[in-house]
Amino acid sequence: MSPLAGSRILSPRTKGTLALAAAIGVLGNSGIITAQSVPSPQISTIERIARPGWWPTKGTAPRSEYVGPAACASCHSSIAATQKQHNMARALTHSSESETLHNAVGSSFRLGSFQYRISQNPEGRITATVSDATRSLSDTLVWAFGSGAVGQTLLFERNGSFYESRFSLFPNAKTIDTTPNQRQWVARTLEQAAGRRLGEPETKRCFGCHSTAAVTEGRLDTDHLMVGVTCEGCHGPGAIHSAMMKSGMDQGTMQIANPVKMSPGDRVDFCGACHGTSWDIVLSGTTGIENVRFPAYRLEKSRCWGKGDARMVCTACHNPHEPLVHDSASYDGKCQSCHVNTGEKATAEHPGAACKVGTKNCAGCHMAKYELREMHTTYTDHYIRVVTDTSNFPDGPPVVGSPVGPSKQSQMR
Image 1 (cartoon, one colour):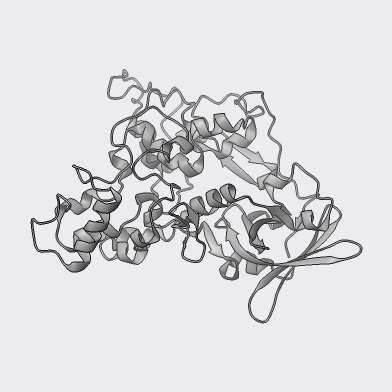
Image 2: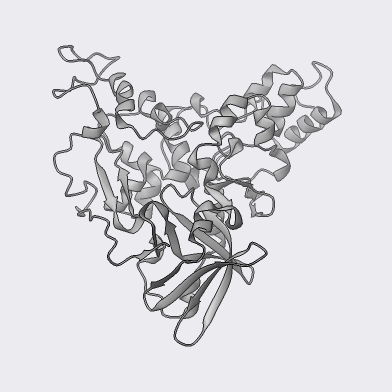
């Protein structure tokens, strides 16, 4: 029996839940189910998920251990309500429910030597058709990845495999263009022009970061996933936590992952499980301006980061339960929690020197913005520094950023 059982009368459901917990070994002497609670050297995500405990994208828990966001909302109603408005909650949708995709229905465009058309049949299914001079190939779009705030990429199924559509939607730029990671090669056949087949490991990673409980017991199960990143996508399966809290057991607070209890390095790596940790990017060999898309990696290049500071973790500035704040001036208070005011000397508590220019719109000066042509958007660089030149990107061999231009892009109608 679990060491937490027997101290009070439990419902049959809770007893069963605790028995399950003991059986699968998630309740140790402390009864804590979290990621590593002591600081550990920063490592790659693939190494993180090989360790005991919860970590985003791990995918080893059974589906029965997830209770869904409605159960979380029964106690955390205000947080659950605002989390629904975050782009993470819309990171994945069924194609038939994608507003971005519905707005593109009827579009006809050309990429390379192939003609494309997006259409919808009377049953509501949305189809992508690609044609060359002699024939056409149509596929029903099943999943839409991305909230549409930057772009949205579509997936279809064929012969039991998922395929990433050759085109993606960029609503802010009112453009349909080649999916970014397919731009390095030229489609020469109709099948290649339709999309790129995803292998099983890549498919798991995609669904693992854009949805909740898509990978359970190591297997991809798109029939029972929860669309978007919901509560349990970050905090881990909540069945045991929920059952214990409903039974009045105070120890239930320990049976859910809480990144706040982690060391600064672990907390940044926690977010980096999907947004790219320093080691993930180094091991991938990615260099140049594309790395502006990986804020955890860029943040840790900053002098501000040092050896890790809780005031510099991702959640110090960005609340994952609320929509992203785009006004750079709103972050001034975060900078001033480390930096002293003009005329003051730095201290151990406030090690940041006073800015010689001012105390307003810090991010506007110290976090440069770069445009990525393939993404049709501008990214804020989280490498915090004194920016003297934005023409070169300070990451490995300098790569000059290029502006987005619509001249060669297909316009969304």
